[in-house]
Image (cartoon, rainbow, N blue to C red; front, side):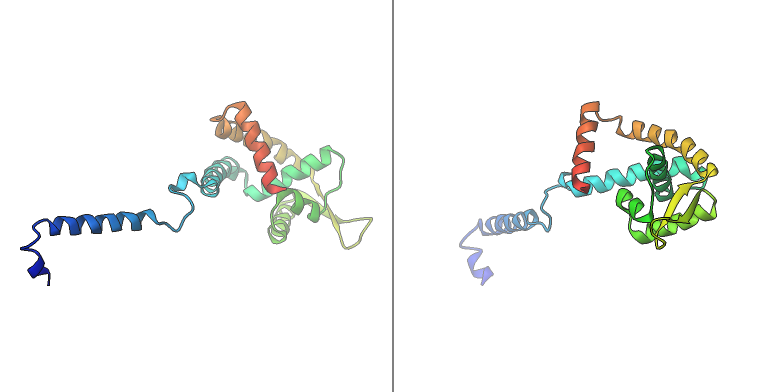
Length: 175
């Protein structure tokens, strides 16, 4: 059939190619994603920023034998103690946004390293109150300025007003 059309319509091949190209272009324009480019996705950008930031934190605290989640829990404990509040595993889960199992494992490791103690709550025998030991307090007080310096360098690419807006926006997302 094509051979019979070709001699009568000399431009048929070009038109056919243009049609196929237009269809291919339209097909390429259709995507499984709601964004034209990955960098337009807030979730993907947050993922990338988180990975880069966590890598920097890990590099800074790894020489001290503490994982990032352990650092976060110790920093929360320091904050709680400085504000004369009581810390339970439930409080640590709520503040850190880590899951219960991760908090439990991290607390066990921190206890084994003698950075924290866990004692039965005088109010509820099913609950343990967690405290930093002197060894743990000394370590976290050493690590906080190191991590804050990493934060200052990482977030330093943003103006102070942008940093404040980012912090406020992130706080809204985790409420």
